[in-house]
Image 1 (cartoon, one colour):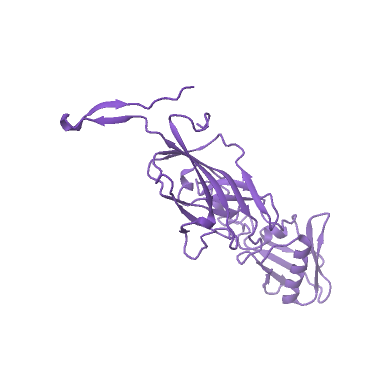
Image 2: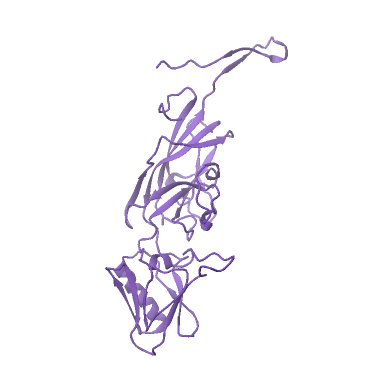
Length: 316
């Protein structure tokens, strides 16, 4: 399939150039059509007898906020005190600017007793209590690992992944805490292009442990895109293996299609919000060619087929 670059008598090749700013409408009420576009099929009309489909390239602006309204909060307490909410202002940061923002957010709740610095050589944050009572302090990021029947927090609703923390609670030692893991302040290193209407019919699978993204069941993911730009830039992606296609045994008509983005293995925004900017895709579709022409002689009893003609084959 695809070995003769669309010149086979068996298949017709269709290519759609899609920009979310050209959407007919949004797939979900309350969501911008540029973030979750639905495209009506125009061209030669609805497509029937589709046998294969694939996303071939994408251009996606890095205009989303790594720290957003869903994941900007975590909990902090001093000693045996009560957990308080620490809120990071929405936006994108460098490691240095995030250290400044974290210190301001903690000071706003617990007073001017804390410093936050970034350890460049270790790619970690250091939190230090520099005045006040000599008490330990604890950060909490959702459910910890190891609880039977409970999924550890994935970072869907807090910033632990970007700050370098595991799920659950981490406590300081002698009023100093270094983030256990390296930071990832620029966010996930990849995103998925998804479709709620056709993604479940595409044989792209994730492992069972991807409990945020369907737990290994098919769809809605259709392509995994490496993020190769910084905030403010544009991600460009080309399918690295365009000769392989997803078999699509759906013979009904394709009248419209939707696409949306999700970030990494989280769903802190579903769909990912591009803040008014649009993403674009190139979609390839292979459609089954009609292989015979049935000619019915109206004079024949019961309208039986009088002659069947096959297509003229291309000379090679």
